[in-house]
Length: 318
Length: 79
Image (cartoon, rainbow over the protein chains, first blue to last red):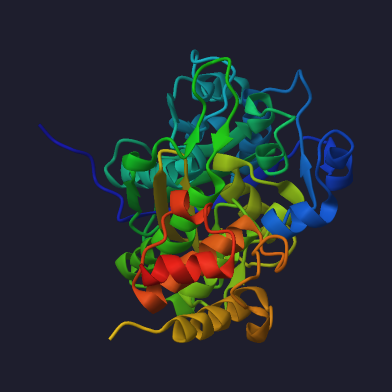
C-alpha cells in the first residue's frame, strides 16, 4: 500500500456568493405579522433579507455561488475533484445537492456529498475539504454553503420569520506550500437537540430563542479562542472575525469576549439575514467585495447552530 | 456570609445598567422587567448569566420566564 505525496497545506483560493433578487424589509414583514422595524432591529439586528422565489432552489443558488467562486479562482471545472455542499434546507432528501451542482457547473464525476451541520455546516465542510487535500484524497475542492430557509419557515411565526433568509456562498480550496486553513475546532451538544428543530417534513423550524442565545453567548468564545490557539494565531493578529450571522447581539457578544479588538467583525446579517450554512462564505465574500478585508489577511470563522453543532478555524483570506 | 437583599439589589442594578443602560437607581424591587424597565427576553438571559457570575446562583431558562419583577429575582437568588 502507498499514499500519494501529501500537500503541506490547503488554502482558500477564491470566494463567490449569490443572493436572490427579492428584498424583504422589516416594514414588509410588519404588514403580515405583529412586528415592526424597531422590534426586529433591536432583537436580531436585521434591516432586510433576501428571499428566493418559488422556482429558485437550494441547488440553483449553490450553482450560482459555486460558479462565481470557480471563475474567480482561475481554475477550470476539470481541476475540481470534490464538491461539498453544506445545507439543511433541501426540499427533498435525495439526490444530494453536491452531485447536481457539480453536474451543472460541468465538473465531471467529482466526489460529491452534502454536509448537514445546520448553521455550522460551512466550517465543517471546509475542515473536511482541507483535510482531504492534505491527505491526498482530493486536489481541489469546491465548498458551498447554500440555504433556502424560507421554505421551512412558518411565515406567521414572528420569532423565526424575521430572522431567517436565503442565499449561498462558496469557496474553492486547493493545495498550498504553507497552511492557509488552520485546524478546525469542532464539536456538538446533542443534549440541546430540541433547541432548534424541524419535527417532520410537514413542520416548520422552531427555535428556543433564550436557550440558543444563552448557549451562543457563553459557550462559543472559548471555541473561537481555541481555533486561534490551534492555528498559532493570537486574536490580536486577526484582521477579521466572521461568525455565523445568527443574530447581531450574539455576534457582538462573542466578538467582545474573543477580544480581537482590531478585527473587522462580520455584520452581514444586517442586510442578508440569517442564511444558516451560507452565512459565513456569503458574508466573507461580500466583505472582500466591499474592501472591508484584504487578500492575505487572517480571518477567524465560527459556525454554530442546530444540533447543536459548532466549528471554527482561522483562514487566510484569498 | 450570604449577601443581604440590599447588596443583591445593588449588584443587580449594576448588572442591568451595564447590559441595558438603565440607571441602577431605577432598579427597585417592585419594577416589572418588561412593563416598567422595557427589558427584552434576550437581555434577561444576559442578566441571568451575569447574575450567575456575580452571585453564584444559576437561573435556568425555564425559571427565568417566571421571574417577572426585580423582587422575584432577589428572592430567587436569596433562596
